[in-house]
Structures are given as structure tokens and as C-alpha cells.
Length: 122
Image 1 (tube, rainbow, N blue to C red):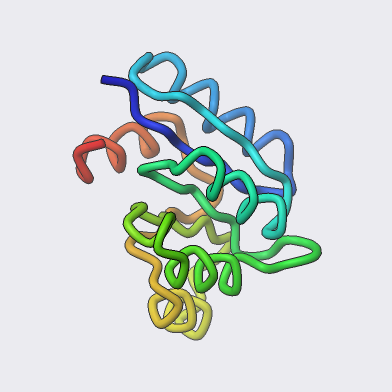
Image 2 (cartoon, rainbow, N blue to C red):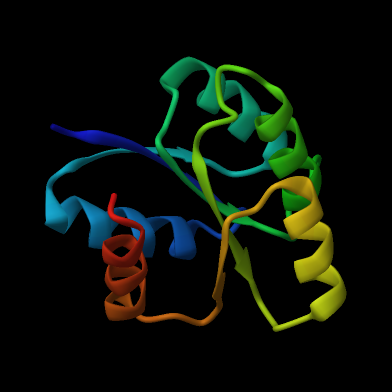
């Protein structure tokens, strides 16, 4: 069974890295968004099981996007992995309060990504 994954990052390289890595696994339907507002729309339409969500984005940051996904009945059950450029305890605390499940620090390798996905069982 194929699972939906939403990759949200304003950096097209990061979106491509995640999408290409997960497409190679071939059990995912990959959807992308370049900012938080688009992410909320795509998530409501596609109902992904897993969301990779950048913290720092234009229009709507990752923390607020996470909060909106968690408060929407249609998207509240997704596993949300926050993508962060640096380990910042305040950002991590804010993301956890917004409903984030896990964190992946940039830069990360495709192997790091696959290990994380395997760990959460998607």
C-alpha cells in the first residue's frame, strides 16, 4: 500500500533530496509545497500520513503550519517531522508545543532520512 508524504520546504534542493530518496523506496506518493500556506492546502487535499516540514519558510512558518495541521481534523493524524537548520532548544520546544513528532537537522543524508522513516514505520 502506498502512503502519502508531503515535503514542505522553501529550498527546492531539500524538497528534491527528500522526494528522490523516498521515491526510490517506491512505497510513497510524494507531494510538495514551498511554503506553509500551500502546505496546508495540499495536506487537506492529499491527506498525507507523513509530513516533512521546514521551520523557516515564507508566508507561514513551519511552527504555525504544524499548529494548523494539528488542529484540522482531516490532517491531525499525520506524523510531522520538523526540518531544522540548527539545533535550537527554543525552536524545538515551540515545535513540540505545536504538535511536531520528530526532528531532522539539516544537513542530513539520504541514509539519515531513510533511517528516520524506517524508525517511524512509514
